[in-house]
Image (cartoon, rainbow, N blue to C red; front, side, top):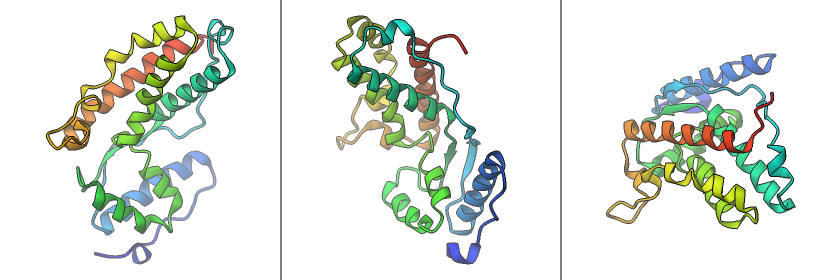
Length: 200
């Protein structure tokens, strides 16, 4: 197995979009040459995210703390929808994955990209974890009611435990995790429909 130093990476490009393509190429090359081949199903969209405004009727009836949570939820949803979707060679072996990531210390851009995979447990939880918090803590009853309607859409894989009491999602194979990621993406879109203005 060759080291990252032996593999080398491509030079950086001049534009943001080109840089993004270079990161994907670099990470694919690094993975292949160091024993962790990557299969990209969606390379994501790293162009600047264009946020819609929060609905005026929501803002008018929110406390400052609630508004921070709503904007954070909005950010998490957009980041999830713009994130890449790919599989690696580690599957359920997170310990080996973390060990391999240490080899990316000299390649921080590639490491950050690798950690934004939509299949990551924490990345998924950022969407519906904050949804649950907001429903439970907001003082705005209407917002709580509207968002609580989405809670049943949280995938079962993140609500159930495996026989060893670990999160069921972590025990799933890649194909099942990909299915769950599509469910989370649908949930993120529905959350944005609830909180964002329809105006561009």
